[in-house]
Structures are given as structure tokens and as C-alpha cells.
Image 1: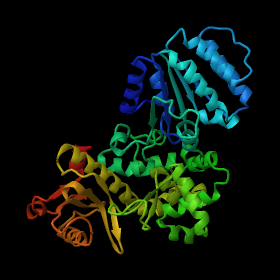
Image 2 (image 1 turned 60 degrees about the vertical axis):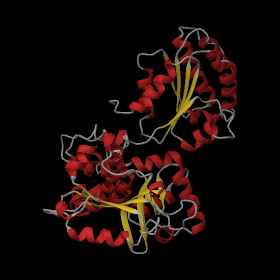
Image 3 (image 1 turned 180 degrees about the horizontal axis):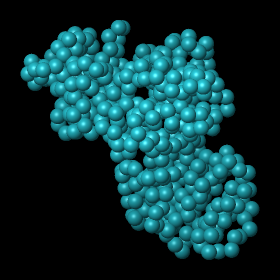
Image 4 (image 1 turned 120 degrees about the horizontal axis):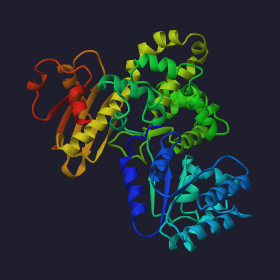
Length: 460
């Protein structure tokens, strides 16, 4: 796979390795997000031992690890009886040479021996610290990495010299991969999301429809069963989790709505939602003006665009897709795709807001999110508490240019947002796929900013 972006992450690892003394880094994040490619890029042109753990018996895992070490040093494979001896052997070798030791899918090792973090603690304290080498532990099981490596209860707590939580690409980062113009790039991003493996499955010389048919709706395609595979590797009984994800993806976003759609009681549902959040498959949101801990007006969203697309369009239509994927695309996906993309467009607009803030095209705001109360909702609200300033913005993925009606609607809804003093400063912005009616910009004062696709492309 081609290595894309990850400049900041790679720079951090490069700097750490080149600095004097030992380094112990922890790299973690969701599956398919590009952690292994990041490690391989780090190891390129550097002396290294890269070990990919597998779901095997402990003895075999340890044997393979020792074989990797012995092979690098052109040494005869020693007889090793435990992880403590294996790490002692590694430590002896590191005393004479500086290199990167990367252990990928570390949680698989912990599954077979939960004492391994204790052995690693001794290795770091007694041997690694005396070297110039770098140890990197990497894992896709975020819960295991956070509890067994990063958590307060872990023997390794406080030993790391750095950590990288690898996130999916933002739309701006994904543009390096997506070769469509900005309109089709947003539509495509609404299908693949920012997960590198999903992004790189598409052939951007082909129309989006063709990519969806061949890479998502074909029963032989990798992405056709990807979400189900993902859940089965993380969860023992994925059926209920799949029903929850489908409910959220199809617009049932409050706990009561999810419970009513799935038939899962509020007590068990809370635990399921917590698990899905821990796996980073869903996110919880409250109005940006409310307290995240105290607000009861929470909404949930599927945290990955591809999973949202799959649970909205693929999972409910599996039988029909097996028979006639073209019919499903033409009759179900294409008519509803604009509504699906509209949600993605809002997320892209939030990226634009942050970039406009960085460039000084909008005033500074410390928080940016959605706001709702009763029947009113505003796509983007920015808060600057220290300056008593607030931003209101709407995002329209429609085929018609935006006109004065949306201006009036946004002004009216802004009056309902209870935040700050009556003398607060207000700033407004509109985002539109199809631009704006003639002379709208001249009819608005300097408190308003208009962003069409060309302005968004320039910022991103």
C-alpha cells in the first residue's frame, strides 16, 4: 500500500529515534487505520526488528519472536522457556547495537499471557533504558492498549516516552488519495470515510457509482463484509451491536429511539453503547453549548463514514444485493445518497471552519459543534467564551443556490441560542454545494461569510 500523509506521526517517531537515550512508544488506533504502514515507514532504511504477533499459542508466539531477533543478529536460535528469557536475550543484543524494535498487534500476545506487561516493565527498567534503541508497541484493540499498556493499573504505566493515537484521515488528508473534483470527492468520502484501507480500494479513474458497485456491493469485494468482520474480531456476540449500528445509521440517534428500534432495554443498551464508543465505532454528541457530562440531550452517530454507509444501505439490503446490486444502487442508494452525503458535508464544513480560523478568515473560537433544542437545530455553532463571541453557520448540500430565506432562518434560530451575555458578538457563515443567488453577498454585512465549493477547496 502506498504510504499517505501521517507526516506529524512519522516526524514524532523519527525525532524520538534520533534523540539520545532510549525510547518506548505506544502506537494504537482502530483497525485498518494505517498503523502497520506507519511502523513500516519508520523502519525503512533503519536497523530494525519488526514482529507481527498472531492469534497463536504462547509458545509459538515466543518462538517466532526469538527467531526474529536471532535472524537479525545472524545468531543461532537459543532455547528460551519464557517471555522473561526472550526479553533478556533481546536486551543483551540491544546493548551492542541501536535499532527499532516494533511489536505489532501486541494485544494478541497479552491474550495468551497477561503477565507480559510485567516482563516488559522489567525489560524497560533494567535493559532498554541503558540503550539507544527504540521499542514500539502497536495494537488495534484500543481497550487492551489503554488498559494493559497506558492505564494506571498497567505495570508499564509511566514507562512510555511517547504515544500516538492514530486517527482516520480527515477529509483534507484524504484529498491526497481521492482524485475526484471536490464535489465528487465529498460524495466519495461519504462512502469510504478516512480509513486508508477503504480509501485506497477505490479506482478514482472510475465514476463513483462504478466504485460502489465493484468495491462495496459486490459479494466478492473486500468491503462487502468488512464491517461484519470488524465486529466479529472485536466482539464475541456482534448481532446486537450490529442492530444498534444499523439503527443509528438510519437516523435513530437518541437512546430512546435506539431502544425503540432495536427492542433493547435502556439498561443493557447503555452498556452496548459504551462498548461501541470504546471501540470508536460510534460517538456521543451533546449541543455545543451544553455540558458533555451533565446534558441529557445526547445523540449518537456512527463514527466512520464507511460504516454509516454500509449500515444504512448494505446491511438492510443484503438479499437484494446478492441478486441485483445494480437495482439496489439505482432504486435505493442513488435517490438517498444526497441525504447521506449532507451529513458528511457538515463534517467537511467544520474542517473548513477550523482552517478559516487558523488563517484568520473567521474569528477565533475554542469550541465548534452542532446545536439543537426542541425543533430548532443549527449545523455549526462556534463559541469564544473569553471574547463573548459566537458563530452560527448552516451547511446546504442542495442542487439550488442558497438565497435570503436561509439567512432569515439562521438569524431567527440564532436568537434561540442561550449563551453568553445579551451584548455578545455574533458572526454568521453559510456553506453551499451549489453556491449562492446573485448579489446575496452584497446584501449581507461584514458579519457574514459565504463559502461555496471553490472557497472550500482553496482552504482545504
